[in-house]
Length: 379
Image 1 (cartoon, rainbow, N blue to C red):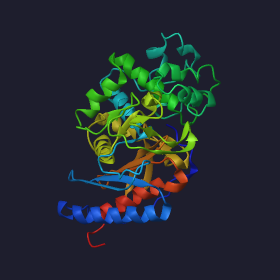
Image 2: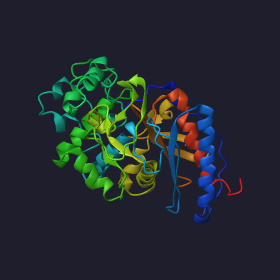
Image 3: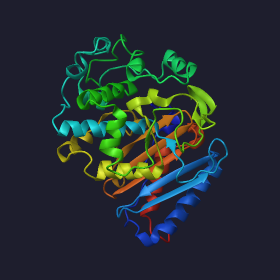
Image 4: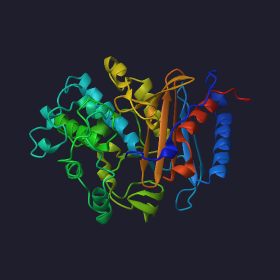
């Protein structure tokens, strides 16, 4: 889901590169992270936060403090919705299919979806490419923030809106600009990408996700958001920025069917699984080697997406070199995760609230946790 909150704007810390911790330093690192999170919670007033760091040797450090929206203590096994971080899974699958020759990054979307009667009503239908959907340069307007769409989601909470039904809210709209001209973030792009994946594979996207990524990478705490009852999902607090306000999980059910997210998000996880995923995505061989440079080639984007956007990821800089990742918001939840290639460290942060002002600068927090992860044990 798109992120309109100016409170999430990043600001980089000046970090000093040092050696990554050895396994014997895990307990002290957990203590440092816990103390840092507790201090932030006392200062900012958010209910709780769950974080994880994936270190170069494969060791993971996970810490949760505070409570969820129901006052239940957060644990490192509490699932939280990760919002637009879900785009990273979709983009990875598209890049895999491109690497296998099943689709072309610069091929026309019309070649895959043009036979559908609705496709001609997509803005810029005859000119958009797969790459332009991936990096949000298609010129297609965002459907998520339309009042009519939000009413449709809220008024019939048990209804599982299909990707095409969601697309209906963007059809026949005027393009924002000519395809490829510039950047404009829109979940709508990733609805079309998911449909392209389904066209090429002949399978529902959720099954493709499970077979290609979740099972091979043993991401056992990551699930596809295709129903209201999501096992292990903690209760989030919605601030009213979109769709609803208050507790988002009651009697084990999300306030509405989250399947409307589809490939614009569509995933619930734990920070440990998110950090493991980012380490695999940006530090492993999930994306075919010939396409990794293209994945990380960013187009100019606003500061709240690190100033540049690649193929399904933020492309930013820090004192540690590149920082690759994504953020996400869903009613009741905020998430941010980054991978630092030079450090070979991934950091993921998730909150059971979408109140950006209360949470503060997520990018800054992730950078602070990365600094803790590489600091000497006695620091």
